[in-house]
Length: 121
Image 1 (cartoon, rainbow, N blue to C red):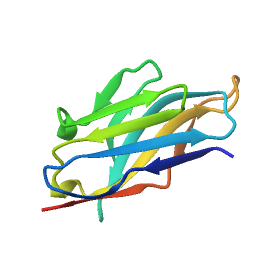
Image 2 (tube, helix red, strand yellow; image 1 turned 45 degrees about the horizontal axis):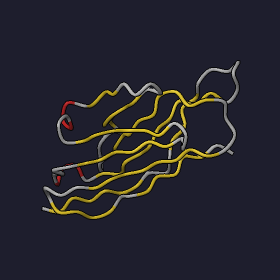
Image 3 (spheres, one colour; image 1 turned 90 degrees about the vertical axis):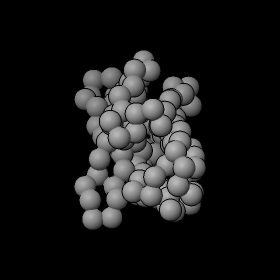
Image 4 (cartoon, helix red, strand yellow; image 1 turned 180 degrees about the vertical axis):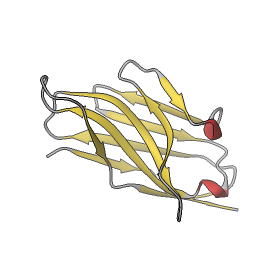
């Protein structure tokens, strides 16, 4: 069964850093784009950063220069390095991957269970 498992969330003081990891497991043909989203209490889920299988990246404006996304295609993993965190960035961070289960199927969206990041002031 296809699974995305995140790790690395926790409590950090404002200005601090955290690293998130996400690994895909199960049976599939290929992973296309991977990314990180976040959802703060009472707010909609929003894109943080995405990365293609070729390594091209896209960041939300509010994290540019502070966050860095990377991936390891051999390990089917994506990472998010977060620096200079702000209290308003407290949220559940979700891993996302566009996965093709078979060569002849379209990509489907897979989501991790989320990992809580709490930034104290």
